[in-house]
Length: 155
Ligand SMILES: *[C@@H]1O[C@H](CO)[C@@H](O)[C@H](O)[C@H]1NC(C)=O
Ligand SMILES: *[C@@H]1O[C@H](CO)[C@@H](O)[C@H](O)[C@H]1NC(C)=O
Image 1 (spheres, helix red, strand yellow):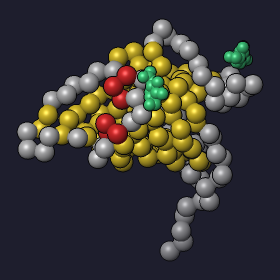
Image 2 (cartoon, helix red, strand yellow):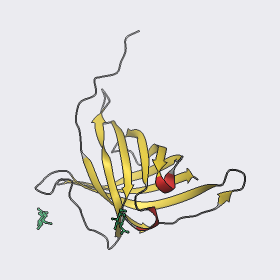
Image 3 (cartoon, helix red, strand yellow):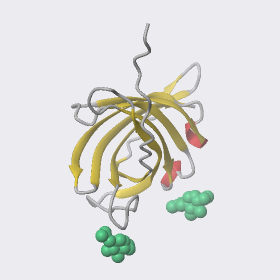
C-alpha cells in the first residue's frame, strides 16, 4: 500500500513567543495515592512572524508575561493546512519560573478548537501529561494570537 504521507515541508516557523496569562489558575487538588496535581493554565499566545521584530515580544491586553513558547511547526498535510507542532512552553515568571511544558500535536488553524497533547515537562512540571485546547483569535498582518487552556497533570 502506498504511503500517503507527504514530505514535511521544512517550514520552520521559529516560535519564540510570548505567553501572557490573564489568569494562571492553579487548581491544586491532589490525587491522594500518587500525589499528582492538576494545574489549569489559561493564557494567550502571541506571535509576530514577520517584520523587524519577528519572534519579538508583544505586550497586549494588560496581561502579564509568563513565559515564552519555543518550537517549530511544519506543514504536514497533502490537503489544506495541517501543522505538526512541537512547542516548549518555557515559564519565566512566578512560581513556574524555569519550568517547562512540552507539547506535541496537530494544528489546523481554521478549526474551532485545536487539541494538543502535553507529553512531558520539567521543573514543577516533571512527569507532566495532559492536553491543551486552543483557538485562534486573530491571524494576519504578521501577527498571530491564540487563546490557550492547558490542563496539566504533574507531581
Ligand atoms: C521593534 O522593537 C523596537 C524595540 O522594542 C521598537 O522600538 C520598534 O517600534 C518595533 N518595531 C515594530 C515594527 O514593531
Ligand atoms: C526567573 O529565574 C531566572 C533564573 O533563575 C532568574 O534569573 C529570574 O530573575 C527569575 N525571574 C523572576 C521574575 O523571578
